[in-house]
Length: 504
Image (cartoon, rainbow, N blue to C red; front, side):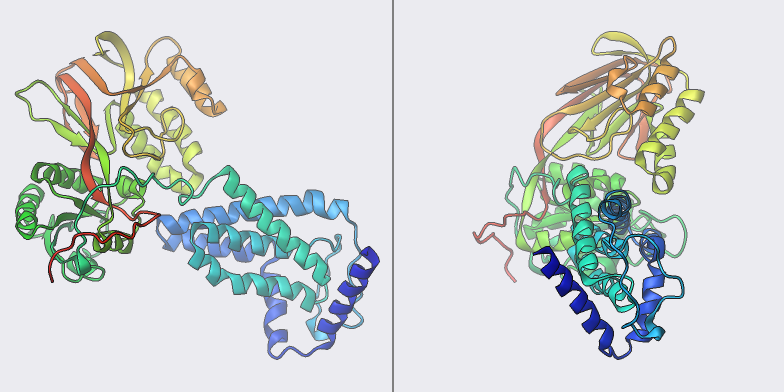
C-alpha cells in the first residue's frame, strides 16, 4: 500500500511538472519565495494589526500563533520522523526551479503547513477573512510542487498539520465565538426595521484622539437609515445628559428604544437613562476600548443593527454605588475601582497592543507598585491598607490584577479583587505576577459578592468607574441590580416567533 501511494505521488508530481500552467511561472516562484520563513504571513498579520481594529488584530494574532505551532511541529517532529529525499528536478522546467534549493527532508511541506495554519487560524476568528486568504494559501502550497521542491503528498501532509495546529490553538485559546456571552436571560424588545423608532445619541468625541471628527449621523444611517440621531460632545452639541434625556422621552413616545454610539462612559450614561425610562438600549461601539459592547458580543455597528431590526435582546446586570439615601447612586456596567487601579489600566492598555496582555499587566503592576502608597480604609467593616480595590460587574476572566473580559453579563456577582499593603507586599505581588500564579499570594484577595461596603475613605479620595472619575470620600455601598437593563444583542439560536415591531 505504501509503495502504491509513493508511486502515485511521484506520478502526480511528474504530471504537474510536464504540464504548462499559463501565467504561473511569473507568479508562483516569487510567491513561494515570499513565504520563506513565514514572511508573507507575518507581513499580512502586521498590516492587519496596524490598519484594522480589534477583531483584525485578534485574527492576526491567532493566525500567527497557529503558524508558530505548525512550524514547530513540522521542524521538530515531521521532518525528523520521516526523512524523505526531495524530488529529482529533471522533469521540472529550469525556469520554474528555485535558485536556492532547500536541503531539509521533503516530508512534510513547511510552507503548506504555515499557509494553511495561518488561514485556518484567521478563519476561526472571521470565516470571511479566512475564505479570502484560502486562495493565497492554496497557491503557496501548490507552488511547492510547481517549483519542484515537494511531492504532492508532502504538501497534503503539511496542510493537514497546519489545520491541526490551528485547531490545537483554538482548543488552548478559544475564540470569542466559542466564549460568546450566554444568550440569556432573553428579554422582550421591539423589532425596529431600519431603526424606525430608535433614537440614538452619538458622542462626537468618543474614541477620537487626532484627526477630523467623524460624521456620526452617517455612521448610524449607514446601518439604520430610519433611526433618529442626536449628536453631542462636539462643537455646538448638546451635553450628554440632556441629549440622553430628550432622546429617551422621544423613544418612549414612539414606543421604540434608546440607542447610544460611543465608548464605555457614554454607554454607562445611556444605561442609567434607559433604566430610568424603562427602555431597551442599543449599543453601537464607537469608543477606544468598548469593553461592554465587546463583552456583550457587539463588535460592529452592523451587528448592533441586525439585533435592533430583529428585536433580539437579553437582560444584563447593573452594579451601583452610592452613600446613604440622600446621595444619588451611580451605575457601572464594567468596573469600579479605588486606589491605583486606574493608573494600572492606563499603563497596561498602552503596552498591551505591543507586547501582549500578560506582559503588559506585569509591567503595569511593577510600575504602579513601585511608585504607589497604600490607602487605608474599611472593607465590609475590616480596616485594611490597600493599594487598590477593584470591583467588576460580573465575573471577569483573567488572573490577579489584570482581568480581561467577562463571559456572563447576568451572573449576579461583583468580582472583587483587593491588593493589600503590608511588609514585602510589592515584592510578593510582582513575583506572583511573573510566575503566573497571582491567586497563590496573600497580597491579593479575591471574592465574589453581591454587595461591598467601603468606609473610611479619606477626604479627596476618588473612584473610577467605566472610564469616569468622581469623588468617593466617606462611605460607599456597592450593590448588584440583577437583570436590570435590557440590551439588544444577536442570539445564536434565533427563535422563529414573530417579534412585536413598530408600524411602518
